[in-house]
Length: 324
Image (tube, rainbow, N blue to C red; front, side, top):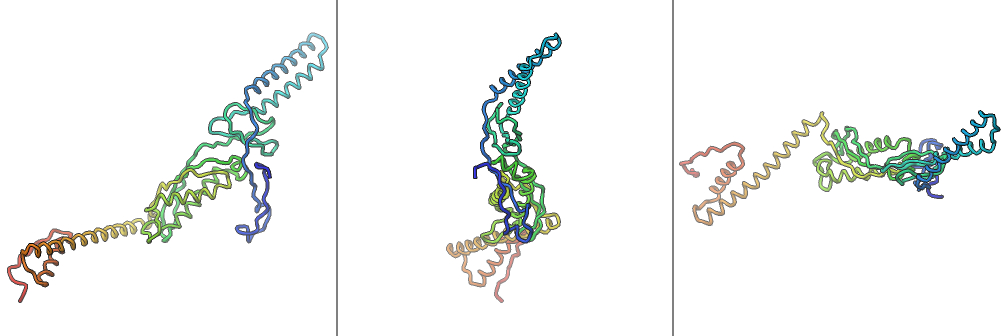
């Protein structure tokens, strides 16, 4: 089939169409963009002005002859009418295309093509021309409440940067492509957010908070797959808002604080053990004092208490002996 021809596909009977009657709602109109014929409109504008001037002059001459009692030339009247009709045809073919815009042309309902040239242009007469912007646009989704992969409610929003890639599909394949991309972006955001945990991911698993770039790329791919039917393409997506829902925010904050405390304690203990080992090794190497196993255990206990304690330790001087 020639590129750019509108057609109706056969109704699908499987997949999403299964379980519902097959009819008009099961069909999908498809069309692809093609270039419409166009040329510079400067010459056409000059011709249109000349036709209008000739038609007006002929009409004035006919009125003057009738007023003065002279016979009106039928040829002159017909020529004036023909010139005016040609003027209307030429004017109907003129269009102005601004930078970043295109014109989708239709001839009595049939798609002829898209004009992407800029300036004053002449196209096929008697065509309707719909302006479609191909500028890069962006919007921010509503803040959605979604359950993440662990079932925790979170609030998430994203910024989607997009533009029209195929003007024919954007006009004929969907009703309102601006609303279409908004709804599909929010649907994709819900799906991606529910596929990952907010935080505390397992090994080999990506979290929403810890892998924002990866989640953004995944969201961009899913949104692009959903809106390609409308001739749209995604330039970039970014997570703009991400937080636990209010009902569990306090509990999750306590969990994060507990995890931070445990991580800090683990680091402190690791450092304290290293310092104790270094102290015992230094005492033995310099032959400062000879310690048996019981005295080493007491020293280790005292050093760990001093190094790992949250508060300032108060030393106790032992004047006795460890042995009874």
